[in-house]
Image 1 (cartoon, rainbow over the protein chains, first blue to last red):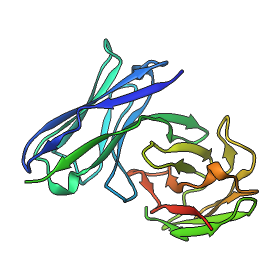
Image 2: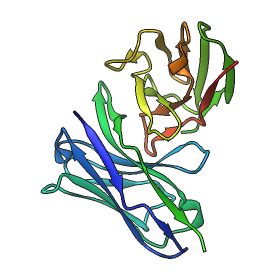
Image 3: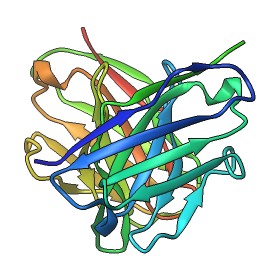
Image 4: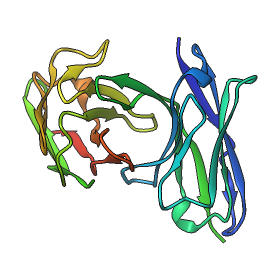
Length: 121
Length: 106
């Protein structure tokens, strides 16, 4: 059974850093595209970052230069390192496994339960 | 690419048919997905490729459309279908979602 479990969310002050982790079971992370998607309280979904199976990474403009996605193949985990956090980064952060179909690999097939990041002074 | 969903909320009864629309600001072929999200949970993939049902999803869910205009239809609404639904374009970075449609009990 595919399972994704996020951790690391916390209450931090503006300008601080935080590292989120996503532990996967039931599949091999390094063979899949993996993303982080966030949802501000009571709001919609916003894609944040993606790491290809080959290691190439992509970021939303709102986090480019501040966030870094990575993975640890030995632990089957994907991480999101977040620097210089802002109030507008406050959200539930979900880890998601991609699904490939004709023409694209950019559907989100499996999601975790999310971890809450709150940025406030 | 901006994704615009309507309505933002709809009230319906068990057994009703509900239709949700999603419009892309530019053509995305059929590279569109629909997700269902219940309170406190991560979203679940319902439909991909605009009209293909994800494994395990009941056949009362269906999707249609191509280019810029898409529709999610729920036939014979069941109690477990009361949730929020999002569309997502899978054509171009950044990957973007619609604002969501909350299906509420009338």
